[in-house]
Structure formats: C-alpha cells, structure tokens
Length: 159
View 1: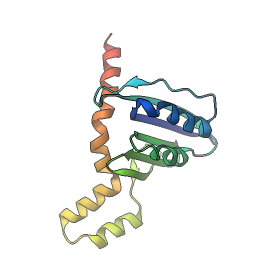
View 2: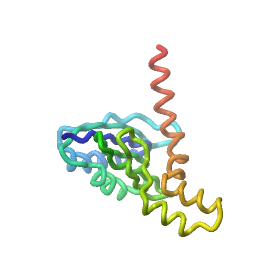
View 3: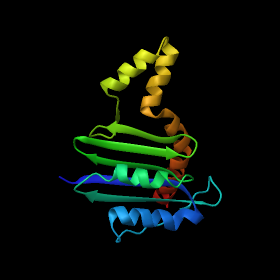
C-alpha cells in the first residue's frame, strides 16, 4: 500500500531555499525539484508545494528536517485510507503533530482527551486544551498564508 504525502511550504526566506531543497532531496530522492513562488504576505519569502507517493511514511522525517530551518512555515502530511500524520510548524509556535483519519480530519485520541479533562477546571480551560490538541493556534496563523494559494487558484480558474 502506498502512502500519499504532501508538503506546503508557506514561507521560506530566499537564503534558505536551496538548503530546504537539499534536505527534501535527501529524503525523497534527487529527482525532486521545487517550483518556488513569491509569498506576497511576507516580503522576501517564497512558497511552494510538492506531493509524493511512497511505501513508507515520510512526513515525520520531513517535518524534523524542515523545523531545523527556524524561519520556514510549513505543513506536511502523509495519508492512506486508514489515516495518517499531519505536522505544522511556525517559528513562533514550534511544531504541532496530529493524527488524521482517512478523510484528513484531525483525530483526538483517548489520552489527549483524558489529559485535557485532567488539566481543566472549567469549560474555558477544557476548550483551550482541546483547541491545543487540534492545533487551532497553528491553524489561525497559517490560514492567511493558505488563502494566498486559494486566491491564486480561483483567479486562474476565472481566466
């Protein structure tokens, strides 16, 4: 069974583009090349995306390699019909890992729910703990950067 993977680099400083490419080539093979586009929301940065199919999961290896380049904002996931892993990184928040189901939705497991209940003394604390488990801080920070790609795609479809 093949695992589908995807990587979205939302912002990468120009000085790190080649380092990021070399890291990805060491993980995915020398045949990959990235098509960088400017990131209009962050001056001097670039964005790109890449997809792959592999026999083994690569998301955790890619997330580990890319988070060492502190100024890169990215999302990487591996998926199969049984689910997969989803990693997000921003310099301000660090890394967030979540399990996802076959539809790509974040799955909160029993241990995460138990930990949230143990730490929560009121409804607001419980909401915060569950939002942290789902990665809502990362979601809010990365959404404007994702929107750039969505606007670009909708503009191209309208042409």
